[in-house]
Image (cartoon, rainbow, N blue to C red; front, side, top):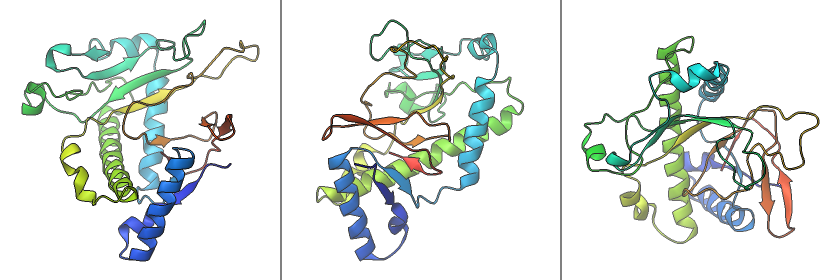
Length: 246
């Protein structure tokens, strides 16, 4: 069964009939696959392209720069409730517990909050300051693109979650108390190409289920993303397109 594609433009219109169809499509997609490709989200293509461009430049930096820029890049402050920011090394995760770690590297961002922000001092989980790299070509531009992209994804995530509420018969205000201070993580990821003679156990990232309420993915055109289809007990390739997936 192909991955569903859902046009969310009805969210921004006043057509009640179109919104009803959207809710029905969303419910069907979540029940059948738990995954869909998303169009009509109103996010400028220029911002999506800029986010991918800045991500590519970041991961092209030498390893020692990625690890050492701004001091210790990887930061998990348990004393402040726990927040994760900065660089994640290649093969530092191993989702399927195979012989090798996952062939990917990452970089964590979130909403940039100062250490003295009341929410941070209250030890709210995963709230804190970002660690922006200084060694990219234009650090100011990098920060603006990443912050703008994170903000746009938070708005889109709220739209998706509020629409999900309608699939179970709840008013979209029902969820407001749960999303007033989102802990949304923006995770830039780089998957190096696998060697032609790579082991059968080599993975860009092993099979897993994400732990958040929803995940929004921005694919490049390389491909490789797969979704498990429980009905057929098969992996389905998610064909790269210039849309978002959730």
